[in-house]
Length: 336
Image (cartoon, rainbow, N blue to C red; front, side, top):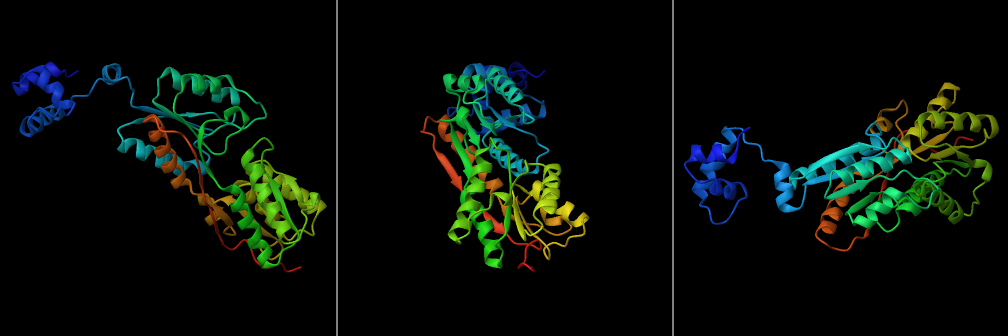
């Protein structure tokens, strides 16, 4: 391993001078800095992160806890945060909760053990009102940004979220303006405030049009392709009169749409379908999916900027970003 002493001997300067160069001290000439840095690079010098951490009181580490990197919604969020962290000189540690509260709590504790300077967390929504790991975050005052809407157990933390209420209204109005009145809604997980807000937006837009949402048109569909397929079979068997539907997310919408197509139905002739998320597959599905484009890249950037402000001692706040609809081939005026 290359030491500061080794570089100093090659550069014919003191160890203190090398240390100052690598810390970009102001009392060292530009010529000396250039020569020493070039030598350090040629010799393959790697700074001792642990030693730097002990001197500065920071680790230059940030943590990110998400349900799963396999979920396409998180890909651009991660990309934005990692790029901003790289620019700011931070390394990003990523952990997966796999939608398990106990795994999320374990990930939080491991991040605390690594002494991260700040944390981003996509919470696993559940009905519990408290969480020991989240309480520990509060106690230690670790700068933390919630990616999404806060639940009861993670209240009080700064968060960055999408305006899901208005986004769902936009999706519903799109179908109403096409002439649909019998519009189903495939709800997400019952413990999720995001799922509730998307349903509230649908209900609000329907009532503004003078239509009371019919309980028979509301289906529990979770958040996976398989759950969307199950909900679609229920619609076919129980309410074939429905002319359009809005799904909690694109995966549910694609699962439902695939089932309708397998059953010989035509989209959008027999049924219009709207998703939520604008993941890559939505554009390349058999019938390109009309969906809500979530501001994933902007959300990651806003979350990073929020965390940096908190690390500087500034007061946290809630940031709410607007989404927009992307109209593709899966929606049209009703034919019945």
